Amino acid sequence: MLPFLTDNASKPSVEVGAPSTRAPRGERDCVENAEVEPRCDGDLRSARLRLERAPHDALTERQRLSARARELTATIGAELGRPVRLKITDNKRVLLSQKRLMDAVEIRAHHVFLRAGADVQRAVARFLRDRDASASAVLDAFLEAESDYLRSARARRPSRLNPRGKVHDLDLILRDVITRHFDRPIDTPRIGWGRASSGKNGRKRSIQLGVYDREEALIRIHRALDREWVPAFYVGFIVYHELLHHLIPPIERAGRLDVHTPEFRRLERKYHYYAEAVAFERANLNRLLAR
Image (tube, rainbow, N blue to C red; front, side, top):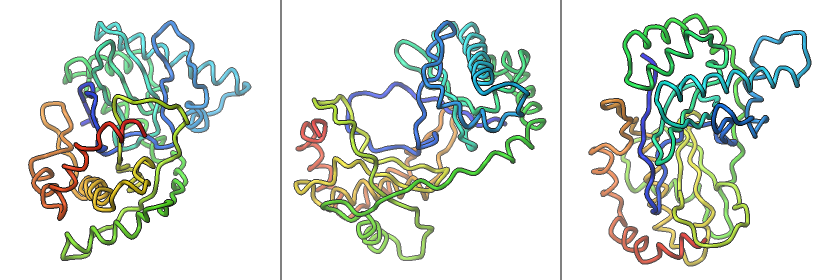
């Protein structure tokens, strides 16, 4: 059965990241709707390198990929009856997913679907609409036929991470969290600080303080926490939360991927400074959002 994910629109908040289902080096909207030319040609680079090369130049190939993305977007939009924002990904774990926003539906699709014909595109749309069984069978057959293509996808080079910040050393914090909370050896993920902010100032509606990338088995922590006024126990709480994502896989329930299961929340409350961390977050929400 095809991997599937549905999420609701996020509310303004401080967000501790759920496992990332995207390639971490930038997954931007490639198609806003069927009529708009894609604005991020570089996002199709992975697909362009993996597609069987025809005897024409790169510009023509990029146009061909863009046309396929527009066709897929239009087909899905017609079936769902809502505007569609399509993102092409290199995520080999979740090949197709949707997220319902207030004004549109965000679809994330592996670049293998740019190789699909009209029949498979319609099956994608029907599957996203109501998990149609016949559509699922078509997609399973398509992915089986494309198994060599999926297996031959070029492996990504591991993301570069720097765990040592100006104030906090994430390697030390991760080791301390593991020592305090686990009495047996565990599979330790890589960890590091996220990229520096774009420099845009002003208070934001939300901030994702941590994110776990299951495909690369790595944790990224927002650089807003590398401040002297942010205590190490709070950074440790974010690290612990993301470590739980590493250790506890999500569960699919009625078409939704539950990443914060009851067991996850039970273990989260066992953090040795849980009460202090929650209190710090509540008291400093505006300060964190200002970053």
